[in-house]
Each structure stands twice: as structure tokens, then as C-alpha cells.
Image (cartoon, rainbow, N blue to C red; front, side, top):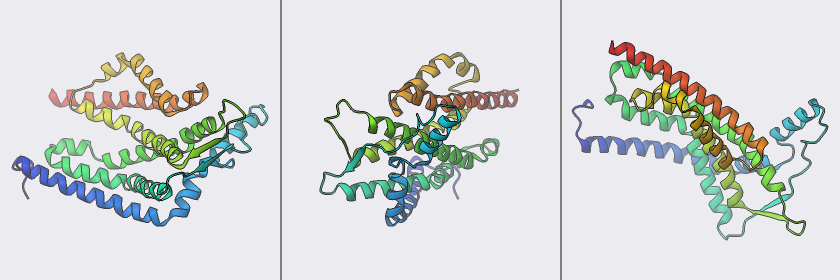
Length: 269
């Protein structure tokens, strides 16, 4: 088999094409299974955060009681309905939700194909240092997805679903709008949790250093707060809940960058 140095530009494009094809096939296969499991995907997962007995709401309710606040954070019902006003609305939602589920579940395999593409171009020590990349990146992504589903989504739905400007207006949310909010919360959180992996590679190629990350921590905090404001409803409590894990990820990224930077300096000696 040709090495990375022997392959032409067109050979690289052909190799990339097959990696993309295999990744797409994996997503389609999982999406097909998700399409078949419609009842579980929608009734249990998609519409779970709409129900008052959702795990997150019960957790906040128990915390409220434990802190002596009574039932101030308990939810009896979410005062809104979901409707579909387009002829193909429900089928379209079913199709795209299945594709999204396919991408999320097949994410480790997509990473594997990405790794197989870049691996031949790495030195032996670089391949050794990047061992466990797929596992760690997948774990971080799934942690982000769970955070988005169990924290960001219910906070957003509870705030926006209960918000009213007048008793004359009843909240009837379109199906696409509801699923779009959930999809954005889950995917954005999943990718945000990849921050340590991103900093690892940026440090490897010399674009960032641990000193740069520490020096610009105050700017990072502003960016984090901005991201939190975008993916959460505009109330302080929700933004704080989302900001804390992102700041922790940033500090972890500094630690990872420091380890990588020290290794590079040691190898250059």
C-alpha cells in the first residue's frame, strides 16, 4: 500500500472520498434503525423534556425541597402544545431526526474514519501520543450530548414554554421549531465538549500554547458567557449552569496544552 508521502493529491482525494462514503453509510444505517424505532425516538426521547416527570425537572424539584425552598422549582405541567402545520411536517421531522440520531450514534465510527485518513501522515511518535483519541473524543462528545439533552434542553423548554406576554396568547409551538431547539442544544453541547481535543491539536501544530490560554483566560470567559447566552434561555440561573462545565473544560484544555507543550520541548532538546 502506498505511504502518505508517495500518494498524489488526487490519490488523497480518492482516499478521502471513500472515508466519507463509509462514514455516510454508517450514518444512514443507524438512521434507518432510528427511523424504524419511531415510537422510542419521539415519545421517549424527543418529547421527554416536554413532560413534567422528566428526570431533570424531578432533580431540580428534589434539590428545591432539600434546600428548604419547598416546591418552588417543581413543575406540574408545561403549558404549551406542539403542532405540525405543514403537509409533510411530521414526515420531514421524522426523517431529519433519524439522520441526526444516526450521526450522534455513529459519531465514534465517523471519528475512526477521520483517524484512518490522517494517520498515515503522522510520525510514529505522533500516532503513539494520539492513542486513545477516538475513545476520549467519543466520550467527550457523548457527555456533551447528554449535557445538552438533560440540562440545556429542559432549561430552554421550561423557560420558553412557560414564557408569556399575555394570558390572551397560548403557546402552540411548531414541531420543527421544537425539534430544532432540541437538536441545536444537543449538537452544540456535544461539539463544545470537544474543546480539550481541539486544544490538543492546536497545541500540537503550534497555534496555541498554555501561556497563551492562561493569558487570554478573561477573553475566553467572555466567549464562554456569550456561547452560554446563545444556547440557553436568557435567565441568569440557566446561563450559570451551562457556563460552569464549559469553564471546567477550558481549564482542562490548559492542562492538556501544558502537557503537550512540555513533551514537544523535551523532544526538541
